[in-house]
Length: 238
Picture 1 (cartoon, rainbow, N blue to C red):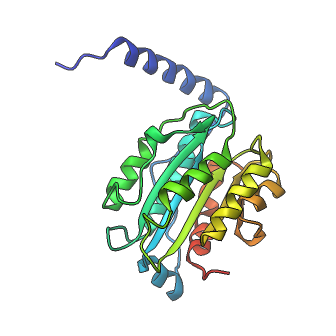
Picture 2: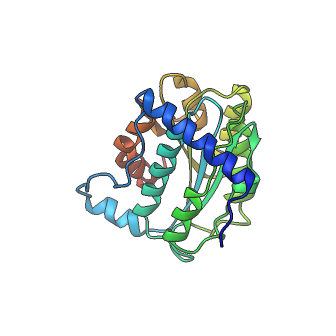
């Protein structure tokens, strides 16, 4: 018979308390359904089937409420659902960050072989509530350990999507990390959520390319920019 340990029971009690508080304050919970179907151009459909090496860099700092973090998780799962995933097709890696990088929750391009597995792995990423925003460390990790030359397939497009709601404590280091990624032919895309992350920070994350910056008003509205993100992943290198 399954027994719920004390630590798991304690986590469940805390989660229920947070849930009740969030609902009381009017927070919107992620919906299980996906975004409404959209009309896709021939070019976008072609991109959907073209292999990409995709790295996801996910903010898990304390400024993000648990339920907002769940919106980000759902957003990324829907993003992955769009692409044709497989060992010879698009592959996905992920690293989350806050006070440093969360290597224990990271996965690499070769870890999972199907979209179903990757969506499940994204769903298993826990909100760490980091007290710091070490964006540069996560970009460095992605560049050196996930989308580096020893792990990617030659000739394929490399894209890193950074989802964040705030400015890093070391803005110059973040800009330098992103610039190094661009030098290694990684297409950097910054997805900024809310009003606290400034335009310069996002442009720095995007390697100085303002065209690769996407903004969402808040986490529940992330789904509104999903189509824009897909388009930017698909568009030719600039």
